[in-house]
Image (cartoon, rainbow, N blue to C red):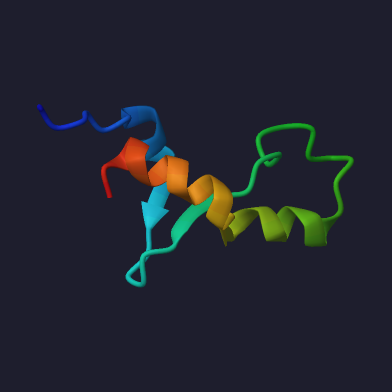
Length: 64
């Protein structure tokens, strides 16, 4: 059976940390920023850990 191909769309958006957690940037920071508070905009800059239930699917997509 051949190897699974890496899903390149997911690979560009998701990073695997040193401990194996999947990290991604928060959504909603692309546009319509004038109505959002400064604290909300600051929180968009950080990466957040992806939940365990969804991380299992993403690991197969990433081949990690």
